[in-house]
Image 1 (spheres, rainbow, N blue to C red):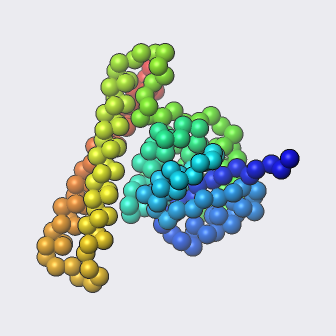
Image 2 (cartoon, rainbow, N blue to C red):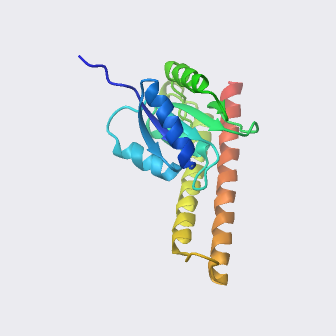
Image 3 (tube, rainbow, N blue to C red):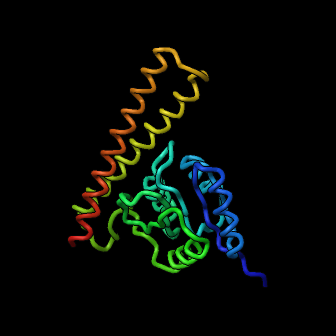
Length: 205
């Protein structure tokens, strides 16, 4: 019986890098799903009925931060492992991080290691039911709400940008973009604060 290759969802807004990463993974024996942004990645994940072994995503993307995408995907697919990619050394996340640029062997080694490791704990899902930890459950609920608000504000921003004509937008268009971007930034900061509180609580248990 033929062995089915493990599926990796690759996400990066740089199309050249996305194609290169896919080529490396296919050469390494994996199957890939690709997306040029976080929202597209969520759509691909929800439309794919099979198991996704790993989410390999860039951190800095225009529609949604890769760490937010990772948290959202873990909530929907608890068995999917997460590997972030970034050229920045200032990324703070509970997920594994691969520094850009990297060599072919580095990518395949880290992908294999992450897939073989334990699945990440879903922060949105909260603590295991057996603990009945009301504090952790409350913190997880706060993370869930902040994530929902951020996703909502991100979608609003994308809708506004679609409505702005090419070239220099009119003054009203500029104001709407500024207000939406500011709202999305605040929502993201609130989400990160809530996630940090939950992470600190879990580590301190």
